[in-house]
Structures are given as C-alpha cells and as structure tokens.
Image (cartoon, rainbow, N blue to C red; front, side, top):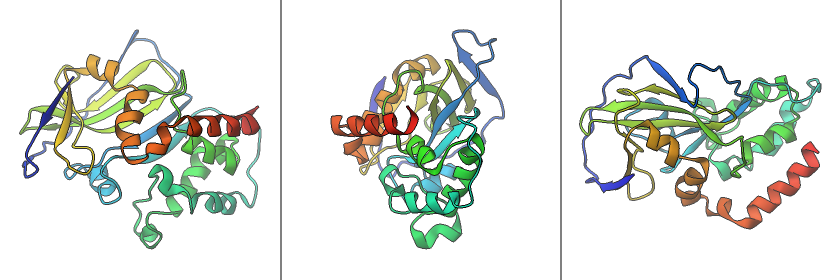
Length: 247
C-alpha cells in the first residue's frame, strides 16, 4: 500500500464501467451464501452515487443493511414504519445514513428512503424496528460478519487505476469485484477527508483484500469523521444492547 498526494485541482476523466464482475476467494467455484452485509458509498465528484454522497460527507455514506435470511418468524405490525421513523429521524446523522431522494431534502436526508429500507430489508425478514435499527448502527468490527465481500470501482483514465466507489462488509469468504479495468490493476480510494489531497492506493485485488478490512476501514475512514465509533465505550454500549435484543 502506498500513500500519494495529488493537487486539489487534479482533473479526472472517467471512462464507463465495464459490465463484468469477478468472484475471488479461497475457492471461486464455491457458491457462498451471504446472509447479511453493510453497504458503504465513498464520496466522489465523478461517480453517480458518490456525487450524491459528496454534499453530505467527505468520508463515507452508509448505504444500508441487507440480509437474505429470515431472522425470526415475526410478522409485520401496523405501527412498524412509524416506530422506525421515530428511531431514525434523530439518529441517521450518527452513521451518515442519508436519503438521496428529493422528497427528503427538507429533512437533511431522511426519512422515506430509510423507512423503505426497513420494510424491504428488515421487516420482511422478521426484524422489528429496533432490531433493524441496531443492525444498521452496529459499526463494531464483528468476527465473521465484517468480511470484505464486495467492491465496485470505475476506471480512471488519468491515473490509470480502479477508483473504489462502493464497499460491502458481511458474511462469506468470497470477494466480488465489479467495474473498473480488472482485478489485477491497481486500485485506489477516492480522496477521503476534508483536505482531499491524500489518496491511498492498492497494488491489485490481493492487497485490497488483505488491507481493506473492516477494522482498517473503520479506523481510517469511518472514525475520521465519527471518532466515537472507535472507542471502547461504543463497543461496550452496543454489546450490551445486542445482548438485550438478540439473546
């Protein structure tokens, strides 16, 4: 891994993402069931979702929590959406979980999108509003459920690198890579932080897989803007809440 500095007026011309995707891991022929994952968007001036994230944060935007497994036999209740809105409307800023919908602009990025995410990815899988809220806000480095499982990038023709635009951490041991110029090309994160000058690069997908762990992402990206996430008090508080919700 190398750290390089570019001028802030650096001009970038982006080519179209290729449509191929590559599954990489200890056994690329083995189908691995991903039960859950947290999705992140990195701010950018040149990629669509990154441009939407950029006005809200120069570090990251949380795109949400996704699961493919029913957690319980709980059935939807009439007041679920209202309860979830009550939980999220004063808390979404804590983890940069923004809505990019025009209708949510007046609320600074909340809450119709988050409500729909709960219905589609939480309520339908047996999660109560409180349980889904916890899943989204739990940014601890949890063993076996915070593996790097997905990377989307685009090819930058000026620096000749795959620029990472989206990341997912979850269950499974296979890394899926989409976009860019192939997994053996160099990768880089877009400029992260307020200065926008420091850029971190990776020499191919193996270094991405080895270095860009959730622990690394949490310490170097999330906690750059949300330092409380990297405290012992944060981990202890969430561990206590998890024991009450899921035990």
